[in-house]
Image (cartoon, rainbow over all chains, first blue to last red):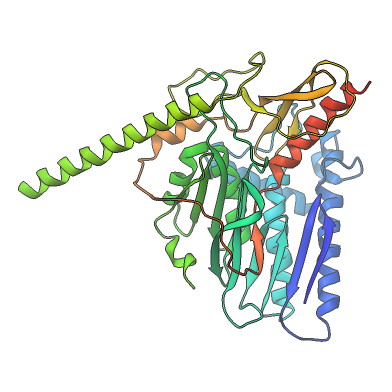
Length: 246
Length: 161
């Protein structure tokens, strides 16, 4: 059973295989959790805690959860050599690049804690599965063709690993540096990690590194990646093969 | 010893081929380049000799529906693409959107650090191909396109006649 709702500016899908009477309740609780996250972390909402922090809410009044998120952001900044930074050019703090994967991971953990075995939570194409799909096999997640959103170009077979993709989806258009010698040639980086929190934050940071991103992922244990450049050539990490045959 | 020499020789061949491929790609990209206007470059990164892009990038607007805009160039807001900022400049000619130039694109920070600190392993490559496999869900990027649309809309709002 699968349901989709829009929240945090993207479609959120929850799919639960376990045929239990409380399944619908669990789904609506999951959507409610994402709405609460949006209300707290959206920089587009004046009433959110993050907006209040950016307009001077004293540190002593920040929620414990927000302090935890800032701590995770700091850690990610260190681990990505400064590539991941929540401080915007205007000086405002925006942890949304981390909150998305973190929230998906929390939502999946809540479902697991309630005893559900086979499910996935998908927020805007970043997915945390658990267990098996409805046919009793691995979950099958396609990597979207960055040049044609209606197509997939690869199928990943996973049980409990998170899958996240960062990139551009400007349909059919190639982006080049007008100065000539250096095309912007990465259009998509998909990362598989032990969970969606790890996959998402490293997909975000890895994509921002350009062509070097896939090497960065190769060097990180427990992470695999599939990068697509503007010519439609994909580069994959050496351990990806584990996830491309069922 | 012989073996070591063989390995070194084959590595050189592989590296040479890699360099050639890269060079050929660069030329190819240059030939395909469709830049119509080049914006002033707000933050050119000149710190190192990386082959990764700087912050001014261009893309031609393909099939955008004709509408009534005033001729001129319009700069959109800087929109958050989660890992950086996207800002575009829209050019209107004869009332139609004819070009979109990226003033900011999230690909220009610190990458030289990583190019230098990580040795480049030779990773497997393949040409992407559409698949017909049945899947349970699809992983794909949405963030940049949203930021792109946001910045473009802001630019086009100024162009409304």
